[in-house]
Image (cartoon, rainbow, N blue to C red; front, side, top):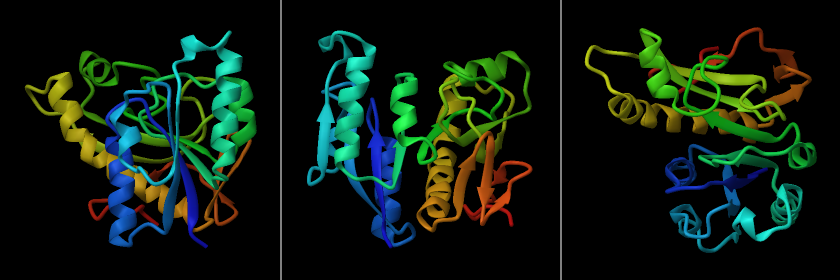
Length: 217
């Protein structure tokens, strides 16, 4: 059965574009059923005009919980199998997460548990790391702390800047997200506590994306 995916995005929607390309190419058995944003002018909202779209500034609500309740209601109305934070720049609260726990995914530009939060590329360079990467993980109330499904790694080279590192990593992030969604769409993934299960078996370590954009067995 084709997986129904709702996407949360705050910006241009490059991750959403990667998902759409994979769907169009027939390499991801899914459909986008809604795009939701905290920024009404976000370009991501225009990428899939024929689906549910919802956006509102959090400042227009009495408090954070009221905003997130409205967001959660809108997402739920699209009846998603999976909810994907694809460049969504707000921290989600416990109420929202509880409604979609176990089917709520995020892509983060670091090799978690390293560098939760922002400015990950600069932090990797400042630390003198020799490699960098991205992670797809289940979302939990603690920031970027959910169980990691898979990761992709790239080398850090001499002369790298945060901008050059981000640019080199971005296409690998896209490939990682699509690969993780293939597993999700196929019914292979589940979250139990702080552990990822694949085919009913716990993952001892995050899956690693290879050069063919597939996860190692």
